[in-house]
Length: 242
Image 1 (cartoon, one colour):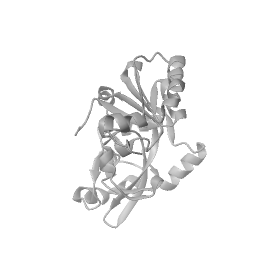
Image 2 (image 1 turned 135 degrees about the vertical axis):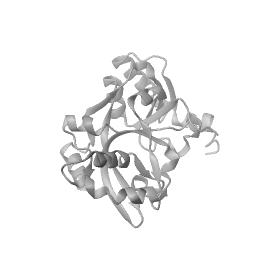
Image 3 (image 1 turned 60 degrees about the vertical axis):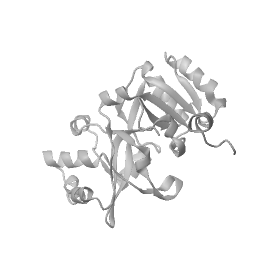
Image 4 (image 1 turned 90 degrees about the vertical axis):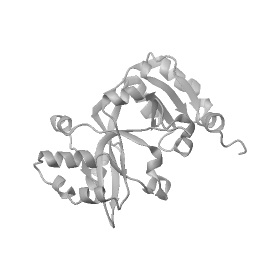
């Protein structure tokens, strides 16, 4: 059983893949997090960029869960950019309960250094297990995704005039104003063409389309294309009898 690899993974749709490849950058989005503790919860959106840290042979159910295209990029790029593993907490974790006792401090106008610290910790927290509403899962184990996340610093956001978080209602309003998108175009992370190693596609029928896109817009070399079917059958070793 693998534990981690030198590649991390980001899932997207075709429009997102095209934008990433042509602009040679990833863009942060506000992501609405539903954090539970005891019998309470808070819904709050942070600007972030999320990848998973799972070996290709262990991806299993994660394949295609958040998009039909998956980009595999070198881990060293993420390390230099300031990515950090998500801090998974159960709803009864004492550290999470203690942190949430101070959450109301974030809703005032002027932040102290301690408030910024609380925000920075909260922005990297995810519940160990909870609802995954997109798939109507009631007890989805987020921990299995081994998420690694980039969140800009408070000073970076402040200098750009970008809110460090949004309430759930503000998040809905933000998406309505941006035609359903939660992307924050000012927040980008650039990469070099040779840092992308894999592109995973939902079927081999799409391979020529993606290869054409790569040749047309960017000088990408030696990218390995794999279909989700190939990964499940030949790398993970499942689905042979379906």
